Each structure stands twice: as structure tokens, then as C-alpha cells.
Image 1 (cartoon, rainbow, N blue to C red):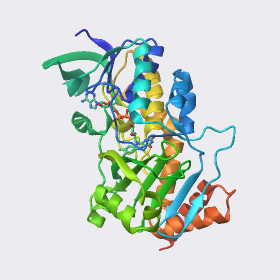
Image 2: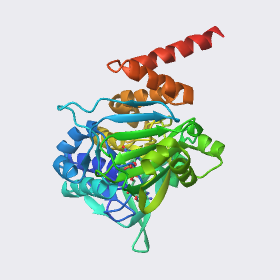
Image 3: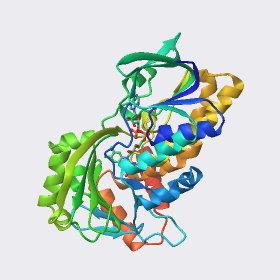
Image 4: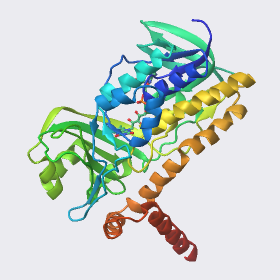
Length: 394
Ligand SMILES: Cc1cc2nc3c(=O)[nH]c(=O)nc-3n(C[C@H](O)[C@H](O)[C@H](O)COP(=O)(O)OP(=O)(O)OC[C@H]3O[C@@H](n4cnc5c(N)ncnc54)[C@H](O)[C@@H]3O)c2cc1C
């Protein structure tokens, strides 16, 4: 195949956002996807309100709304067995979280990218990166049973969290405290479904939770998120944890006691918390391929899609300067920090000072109940400061 300006590996939400914005920058884009859309992906299906301006820009916000369930925006936090906090619902001028099955959501985003005028090939599995003198020069892959090599000036890796050749570039740092195991199932007949629900059983620390996100008035997307460290301590699998919670805890019995599983439970492994490089000579990463999942709840769709817009700007700058070196692409790290850094920091605070032990969680829930108007982030920053001061006095 002919040499391309930019190759995007992966047609998920991160890759499709990148491809859409690269096309808007007037660049020649080829997006390669190993699967075929629409395709499912284990996920909570939670689409945060903050993503809607970007969906508007892509011309797909109405379609997403039409295919999703609008939650009240109120979030319920349940600690072990006794404490509970419900945040106020979204205000009329705020966009609440929508639940949109990924089978639909990813397909709508992918089709928007394809409509923007890119070249797109499905059933193309990129198996390796073409390298010369330490620089990425394109990709090698398998399509229709044949090995194909395609050169490019820049590769945008949007291949999710399981693309092995990335490891050679040092884009992966795996820490069992920050690798989450996820499990998702759809349950019918739950009842009382409008709010976003998080349950923090004591044996999930540090750290993990069970979510119930409403998909309709009676059906919920239910799942487990738990770090590798915490999972090992429980001695159970994620599936066993879910059934154990549903049968042997007060909240589990209340919420899932009469519910029935529709379809199968599906699992996924997810490294979180961006700590490693996301650029090298001739290549940048977006979304899960760059570990852009926040480390409190494991959410990553907004970061992946925002990173797609940043990647397109970076690519434009590199093409204009005709410079695809690591030194030049270094700016991408700073641009990403600017775009998603504050959100990631907020989630890190929640994780480190709000959800690492059962005591922290009870404290936080107690504080939020006593101070419903207060700024939770300010409270956590204060806790972080107190802990740092205590540490330096020791
Ligand atoms: C259980 C679970 C629940 C979650 N819940 C939420 C939630 O409620 N809200 C939220 O915001 N986030 C959630 N996330 C995180 C979210 O799913 C990811 O952050 C998001 O999908 C990242 O998008 P991406 O495009 O970077 O990667 P992906 O969505 O993984 O897309 C990568 C794409 O690349 C393709 N690909 C992979 N390898 C190759 C290859 N070699 N060649 C060609 N193509 C390839 C894949 O087929 C795929 O289409 C959850 C994750 C899990 C595991």
C-alpha cells in the first residue's frame, strides 16, 4: 500500500476521535481496525456529561442521546453495610451521565470518523510496528490472510490496553495497585433505576467497587472493578465476588435479589493512571493505549476522545514542521496534561484520600452527608495536606 501521512491503529472511541479530527486538519488518514463494527466492549456504558460538547462537534450528540438512557445525574455511594450518600441530581442546565451500550456508542463514533473522509480498513490486525534505527516508520499487519506493510510519517496508537508491540516502546508500566480487573453484565428486574450507584464492600479495598448504571427503568449495567492487589487478597474471581455480594450483603440482596442476568458476564483487564511516556520517534498514543484511564473509577472514554483531538493538533504541527522525532513530539505530553491532567488529578485525589480504605470511605460519606453544599475536592486536598504534614513530622 502507498505511504500515508498518518496511520491510526484502532477504530474505537479514541482512534475514531483522532481520525475525525485529523481529517478536519486536512491530513491524509488511514484507520485500521482488527474487528468489525458494530462490536461489543465490556464497559459500564457511562457517558459523562462533559463529553457532550465533543459529541456535538462531531455531529453525533443527538444520535447518542436517542440511543441512551438519561440518568438523573444523582450519584449514590454505599460503603460496606451501613452508610450511604446521594448527591443532588443534575441541575436543569447540566448534562447528566447517559448510559449508552458500547455496541451502539462506539459504532456511532466510528461511523462519524468514516464519514469525515478518512480511509478505513476493518478486519486488519496490526501485528507489529515497522521500525528503522529506533524510529517507528509504519505498521505491519494481517488482512485477508496476507501480511501487509504500510509506511507512514506518524502512527497514532489507539489500540486499547492489550497491544503487545507497544511494550517495546516503554508505553506500559504495570503496577498491580493500578491494574483493574473489570466484569460487566446486564441485569433485568432490578427496579428503582434512575440514579448512578456505586457500592464499596470492605473486602474490595484498596480499591474496587460494584456499579449499577441504569440502562432502562428496570435494567441495569452491573459490574465489578477491582485492582489486581485487592482481587488477590479476596481469593476470589471477579465473577465470584459479584455473586457473593449479591447473595451475602444487605445492599447486594436489596438490589440484585430479584434480578436476572440477561446474557453473559464479560471481563476485561485495564491498566490505569498515566505515568509512562505516550510518545516516541514517529508515534503517539491516545486513550487506553496511553494508559489514560483514571485510577479512581476506571473511566476512560472522555480522556480517549479528548486525546484524539489533541493528537490531531500534534500531528498537524509535526507535518507543518516536517518533524516526527521524539524531541518534537514531546510537546504532545504537555498538551495532553493540559487537556486531561486536572480531571486525572481530581480522580487521583478521590482514589488516594477517599477510597483506599473502608475508614476513608466512611469518613468521606459522613462528610458529604453533613456538608451537602461543600466542595469535596477541597476536603480531599485538605486531607492530602494533613497526611503529607503528618508524614514529614515522623
Ligand atoms: C469493565 C469496564 C468498564 C468500563 N466502564 C467505563 C465507563 O462506564 N465509562 C467510561 O468512560 N469508561 C469506562 N471504561 C473504560 C473505557 O472502556 C476505555 O477507557 C475506552 O474504551 C478507551 O477507548 P480506546 O479507543 O482507547 O480503546 P478501545 O475502546 O479498547 O478501542 C481500541 C480499538 O482498537 C482495536 N485494536 C486493538 N488492537 C488492534 C490491532 N492490533 N490492530 C488493529 N486494531 C486493534 C480494538 O478492536 C478496538 O476497537 C470501562 C472499561 C472496562 C474494562
